[in-house]
Image (cartoon, rainbow, N blue to C red; front, side):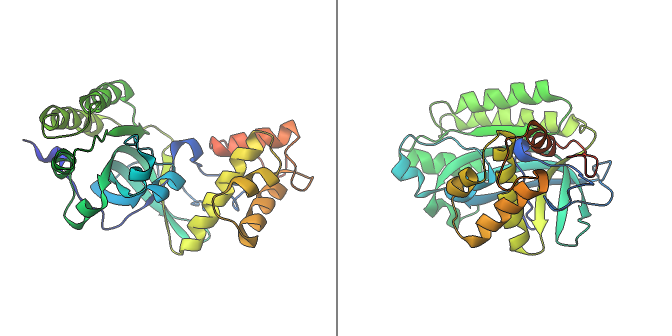
Length: 281
């Protein structure tokens, strides 16, 4: 069997940026998220890696996974993340983070916490799920690749292989379809302009602030006042309150308000990576 389905542990992990909240270079509102002075225009690097996250961490980062149907069990498990990335990097203008631009193919599956003590791969996940009689399904997503149809087709087939669970019986067909998907990814070019797909903060506080600001932007785009994201953000505190209110102040002349159509449009454009002229809002 080809080694394409296998990966190496991620030695230099970038925190994933969910496609729904990705932000590209925004010259006028640099405070929202770290930016590079010049965004890369080509992908000169490739990473074929894997790592694990707590389910809560995965949820906050927007990394999707399919549950077992037992919420109490899911909370005791971790998320195995398998990625193939074509990318380039640049340093943010404020010197606080390294940004990763390019395209990413990502497969995720729940694993028992005890499984993470060994080198995890899909074969180990399948064997563990079989032994423990747990039905775990694989979720596959991707962003930034030109050849979406072929990647989608192979990815969908791989997910369907695990519809009744990834186990020793389904593993062979699943591994063949995953290999097919990764071959499609390897042969595909990357969409231009490159998308922001990951952040490696030089200080964890930078990442935290960016996550909070992006969370607030999603509420502004829907016309919600600042009290809604303050109430809904999973972490509470004066620092969260301050970051959210400051994000509203960046886009609205009225504190804590998103009632203006122009304000909502500005938030949507930021979330979609459209450049905004300085001061027009």
